[in-house]
Length: 203
Image (tube, rainbow, N blue to C red; front, side):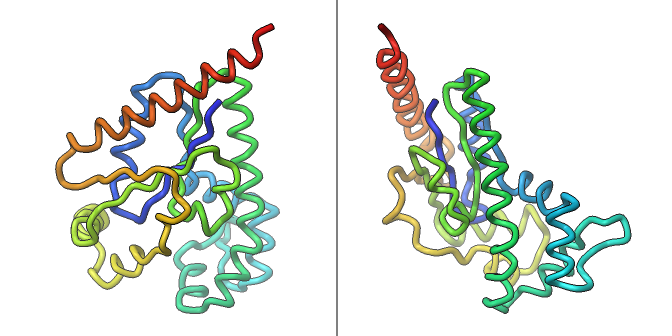
């Protein structure tokens, strides 16, 4: 099974790419943000976060995400302390789900993660795909989708340079048709990987 890491800043068009990937059939799509939310609200992780960041746990035992964001925003050392708690647990869950997808016979598993490199999630993947979109187009999408201020959208969009560590780029602009051939090339790579694995296991 080919393990694909999919990344890109907010508003870049990752959801468009994953929608096209689903058409391949036999593809498992993992949303790292959804996995992270579940892990962060697990009793063990929530307790560890609450101990490190007092005032961030709700009465029902889950994490108050806005309060936690406020505690680490603009505080690099606090953010580093938080990810030191959460990232190892999140990565372990991502790996477990990728392994489960392989056991289930999936052709490929896609880990959709905006912070793929920062979290170390790229180490779980065979191929890294970055979705790249012009900055102004990204900001326009985020403003329309989330109803936040431009300043907040820009803060979300700031992302480290990824191209040097990426094996494949998908240029996703305003014209959807430009994405199809790039996704088709990636599907071909998935098929090649599948055939190579099958031939390697043949007697």
